[in-house]
Image (cartoon, rainbow, N blue to C red):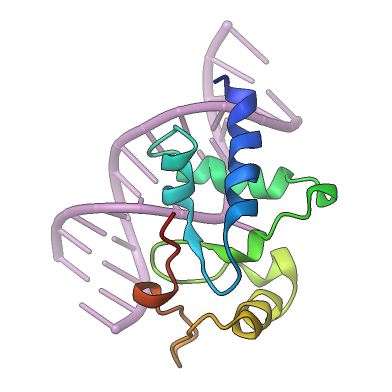
Length: 103
DNA sequence: AGCGTGACGGTCG
DNA sequence: ACGACCGCCACGC
């Protein structure tokens, strides 16, 4: 698997995340065969073509925090996830124990 | 070809 | 529980 395929793999894995669940960048990086490259997953999302319809809002960091609002729009990601049934804490973070995707 | 960067992660204070 | 710091690695300039 080459580096270019890494992005493709990331997209493929991200597209596999079921509704109501979330995955962490590190988790995806691990599944994509590049453990420790969580940041690259984030960049992959930035470069992700909209044509692929990637549910990038289901990808968060291990802290359960959402991506910067500047990426999706104000409260956009939060709203989408809540709509899908992802448990949120009042603090605005995700209940990772219950929402984390188990591939 | 080299340097800085970043939608992160884990640890320390 | 929260914030700050450092370490990783491919991509863009």
